Image: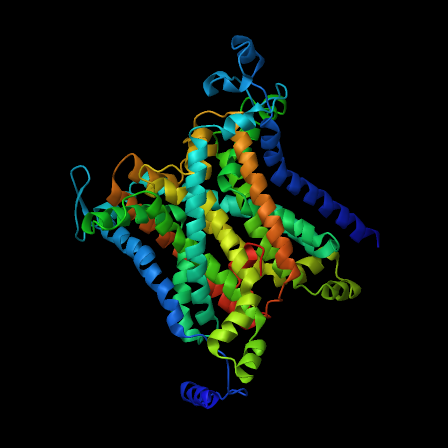
Length: 306
Length: 295
């Protein structure tokens, strides 16, 4: 009897280490958002606001120099970051709505379609998820440029093209999440509604839609965060538009400042809050997936929602 | 009346296997049209142009003429690019193996030993997956910074090397691997292990013969889910190796950003997808076999 107990302790220790590995960097980033510039920089810029010292002059900020909270206001008043965040929020909202609608329509039809008709569409959907994003990004870039050359009505590289590109991936994701739940729900209640004389539209509005709502919300939220956080596709198809990940990326490559930490921490906090709230809502109204549905729900599982 | 029509249609479409129930609510197939059209234009369209570009002939700076020119593909046979492809596949394999080594015991622990806190642990695994990939990579860069505590006090100075890339891969893709493996461990019937140990199997033998075999499909799914994006990885090598250790994704990006050699970048992309499809096909064949012989 002693043996399993020992094994359990070993696994628990490992789990603690892995969680530390997952969370320590994020925690350190958040803590260093409150870090002061190095002592040398503070001496040089003596008397001025600590957080107005230029990024290339702040010295080593990956060790602790003292506490300040001014980076948060510096980050929130930065002329490059805030407009980029607004652009990203706007694109993410649009992408999320369009992708969820496309995914919902496809999920409704596909879930109860015969496998031989469904298969080609499924292949297409999985392809959009399997093809590496860098390949989709460069392919979309040349496609958008060619489309603009041949059809002047097509949007030039910018917000519009970022949106058009992002909807592909997000629609697939939304379709898989919504379909997994739709299949798991079974059709007994809808059948009952039909038997009681309710038409297809009324059945959809009164039975199907409310029961699908958690999956729809999850799909929309996930599309939103994926679109908001996406870097690769936007950086190739943005033209001159700057999104939040694009400005964050250039900040990361060319000099760290605690202001970036501060903004990243705010973004991270907002995401975690939104996800936690959604997870709680979903758990309350969870429908068990039907057995054998796991493979189709592969990506649904991957994002922790069935 | 509507029910009768529906039943008649059911009989016509499935003449051989008659269903016990004659009626089943369905949504019309045309609902797939909007997303099908969308994919056709904005996914298949770009892919088609990518193929066309990879076979086109470069004329001067930025000029192209379409045709069937295999020059770009012959250039990939160049030892430099073969090296980069091999390096990418090796790095993705190492990343996948490390992810399995780190993630499997954690998933096992969650499924086997946790009860009350199981959902909390699952949430802790999922949350990083929802947060920004870029921010997490940035957070890792701060910790690994040559002036930071790890490098200065512990002597772990690996930023801008391939080791940092490997750590970055595991760090970012761990949640994606753990979830399918956890799902397959959750379906495990642990009484089988009790039975095996009662019959005299040593714990490790019981694990090898039962747990590992039953969860192998989940492990393979998880491995493929992380291996594929790892081979196309762009952000991690850029940030954590600072350009010292480029993978094929970075080389593709460079052809469109700096080199302006779009046909060559397209050919590299197609080759990468061809290499990946080999792995996907092997996986599908294996999954089919598993379905036939396994549970």
